[in-house]
Structure formats: C-alpha cells, structure tokens
Length: 168
Image (cartoon, rainbow, N blue to C red; front, side):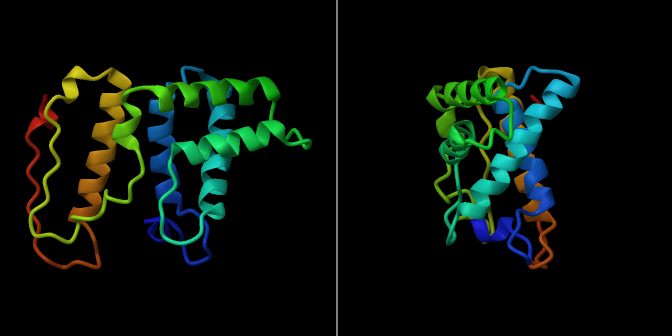
C-alpha cells in the first residue's frame, strides 16, 4: 500500500525509491550509459516521487500513473527537463505498458494481501522463458519482497524461506 511506501513526513521512503528505480530501469530497458543514464534516472526518480505525492489514500500507483506524470512534464511550460529526453522516456514506458509483460507488474494492491499468512508462496516457474530484463526485474522484486517479509521488525514470528526456482 502507498502508506507503507511513505516516511513520517509523507515523502517516498528512500529504500522504496531505490527499489522502484532499479525495477523501472530494468523494465524500460534504460540502455543509456554514464551521464545519459543518470539524467534518465533523475527524471524517473522525480516522476516516482511525484506519483506518490499525488496519490491520496492507500492505493498503490502503477506505471500508467508514472506515464501520466512524464506526459505532464512534457506539456509543462517550465521545461524542467529536455523535451527529447522526456519523449524518449515516454516512448520507452509506453512500450513497456503495451507489452504482454506489463500485467506482471500491474498495481492491484494484491502484492501484500498474503503477507500476514503463515505460509506464502512466490511461484517463479517459467521465469526463464521471459526476456532477460523482465526476468531480472521479477527476481529483484520477489527477492526484495522475501527480504521484507523475513526481516519485518513488526512481526517477530519465526520465518522459513524456501527458494526453489531462483537458482535456475
């Protein structure tokens, strides 16, 4: 939920932002290098922070929301970012959203619904058949989620983590 992604001041938590940046970089296949990649990440970082700042309530924003923020930047008269770079990022994100893999990352607020259960399963069977960028993003996301569940300070229960297909 969006509330868990925010710190006490309402800003997007740095650990959540870092995770979202890595996943987004993989999904939009930011192939730029060096300063070019860093400039792209600065825009994506601001868009992610703005999406969470704009979000009221507990619903988790998705990549369609990020796309709308990027489009808003492009239409802004302030021109805070290079128009060509914004267009390229919008095209990359649109390409991902239009792909058949986007549904794997769609925000349905269901990603945490079983977190309080005694037994939680993450089925990664078939991941090897996906494009490398999607594989990497999925495994990164699942490993982060497993870490969060295993080391949740608000839940002192003993936890057992079994990872089956991750080694493949």
